[in-house]
Length: 264
Image (cartoon, rainbow, N blue to C red; front, top):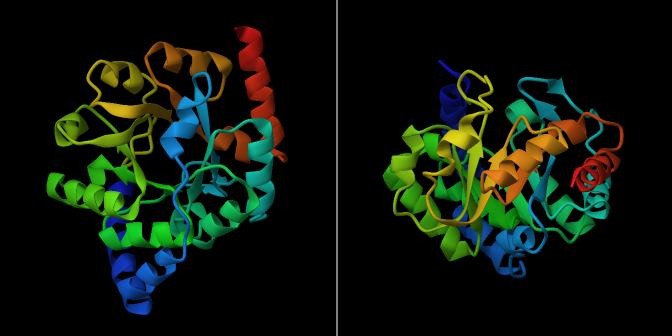
């Protein structure tokens, strides 16, 4: 059994258990106390491409521990100061040392729009994301049937959440056809084998479903990587490992943006 298949089964069980512990009605009460969502896609379009979605990720399945201290506030503030447009916050505890509480902590520490990043397979997960302070949520096309995907998108719209639909191959294009999307992304990492395919963004570029923002994800490290993605039509990139593996993630982001400006 591959990583994605195994983890999706675990997440469905976890969602069912969390629903018992915190009923949907309780989450809706929490949501009612939240203000409006910040415009995730708009923040990425408000800057010259590529807008940076900087990731708050303390562990990677392929790299292991990235940052033992779970200093969410420090990381979020440093990313904002360095020039990130948005944040991606891992909420998955099993493989990423994430936590739902990280969203609220990041929201209190910065003014950037927040993406809840996890393996979401149940509308309940989106309720929890919105209640925890997310402005957008990740949906992985490979984790969901077409019917499930339509249900998840409908729930997100009801809650005011934007969505980033993540594609992992040509097979995902048909599943996304005709959907109304806020953001669509290409993730270079195969989530069953964890192998990277850095040519995937190029192969899918001319076939992407319409969306406000195109995002390239995983394996991006250099100014040349970012310029190549912009040249392929991606307006934003999602990056985390390069930053989180360094003592000061914000400074590493600032250095990358400095290198990018110098290369131009």
